[in-house]
Length: 352
Image (cartoon, rainbow, N blue to C red; front, side, top):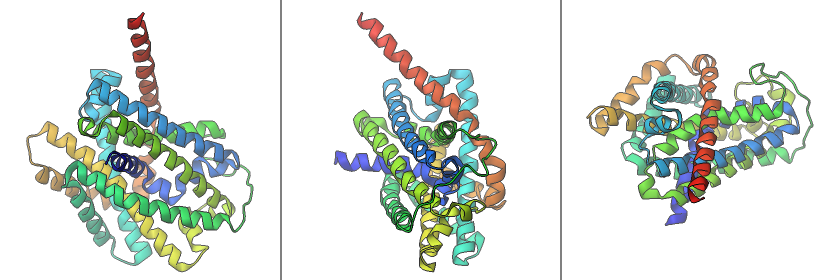
């Protein structure tokens, strides 16, 4: 029973992070594959960072008895700064939810020739089902979906690697990331840890327990690092062909056969659903804690209010909002490490 709970936490942690950027391969190209063989070290470092930071986050949540990400940020950054950060994070989660629905609509239209609006509504229905079943709905949703998408991503990536590997040099580096692979790895973790921390701080630590949460985070981080390693390897097989693509992994899948393209389109949709469910769950917790309204009404209000934003289109939303999302990440990492070190020092001092 405990092992099953650990797997659910790991799957939920992975689901919160894997999203559109990771599963599409776009983030992996920019932050890792661009740096050649050093990118392998970068993705392994990122996996270790997710594992360690996830464990530190849940330990802070349990020791401080925080309830929701609003309390978590107040503990880390104080009431005034924490209040501003939680407003910013709430907006980020809502925009992120809308972006995931927009991405789902794009996949339905481009990969399966299904109208964009219908694709958005179908995706909203799946997220609503998970949302209305509460925390268990989120955990079970990820428990079923994340292993499926992980196995398919791993299989396609591994098959591509067996075709041959090409060492590459640095090319088309994003100026916001820079030319240093270590800096790129740290920025990648800081970019994604915001969503990870929000999800982890919103889970019921009383029911799950500190050890279960900690082991789940460590397992999730290690799995992200290992899966990313295989994906980066597959992207390097024919890197020059992938450099200008929005969804590099679709091209990688297409190198196998046409069926793999549809299969990977489905995988990318599942990845977006897991991130959308995580964002929606955290927002629902926040809404119901502020206003005395039912989960059903709050959930419907949340999902349908994201629809107009999703209609702006996936590419436009990514281009305008994603670069903004990562800036608070480094501050959050520093705050997590500082809080942990300070508490350990105080604990040792009290024993003396």
